Length: 366
Image (cartoon, rainbow, N blue to C red; front, side, top):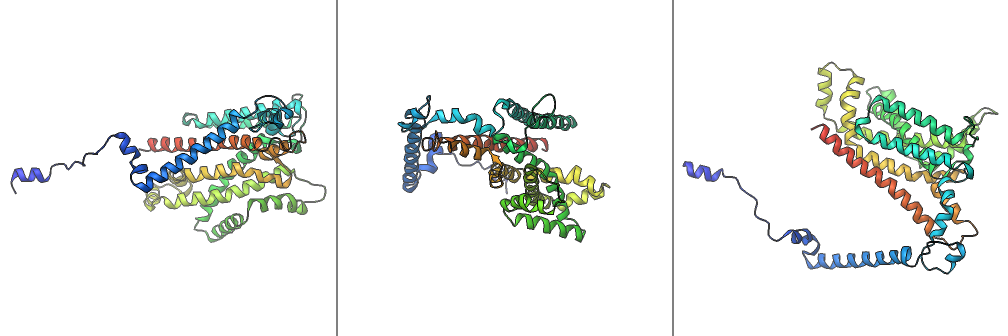
């Protein structure tokens, strides 16, 4: 083969030039064929019709100010209901004059979450910061010191209760889930069998069953005269349930790590716990960020089940506000729209942060 032929054979093969402009390439999948075009037009018409109807109900025909009487003749949304019942929907039966306490506790909690989201703050100081924040939130909610009135947990409700049940349940359940995942992969038969039985039993029953057991059956096994707070029992049930689900997700991440990583740790003289802490777990947890966030979002929304055992979470306080005789039959959808908006904002925020965290960890380990 001559030099010219060799150069021609090894010449870089370039992809064929794209035909059409940017708009054509973007819209091609939607209008490329007659069926795609018809489907796209139907979807656009349906979404447009729905958007116009929602806009008319929420804005054009809505009542923005007034009272229940002003909403009776309205055909649109009754937003005065949300304004009138806002504090009850958010704080529940917490004493009205003390609403500044759960409001400040929520701001402190959200502020601590905001500080924790920045990777540059991931130091030991952050643990001390969270410890101080938790103590301050507990003092604000319960009282009893600094002249604050004692508010029993039976009066806690609304959004602060939903935050507390989901955050504490996941924060405490996460390390338990990691330990269960390691135990299920252990080479010791007794530990592995106990972990498998615990995880499968907990995952085999719905959360509401565990809540009922913690609320109804647990007191039967306690000595006479000893009672456990209902909120604490519900919190323990959520921690147990979260730990079982987190364990299975973490186990999947551990099994995705190549065997060579374990062998490399052994060749470097690292012990089991050193290898897990320094090499294996950081990689496996990075892999399972998406399913972990899915679990977090699900548990944040599943706190609504505690209403079955007599605790008033955010969604139940919204339903309670709608049962007010002065507004009953007038405001039907407005409360649910408000609750859905709150859940959507926080769920979307968790999802967006998970995507940021994935990108950050990917850049850090390049």
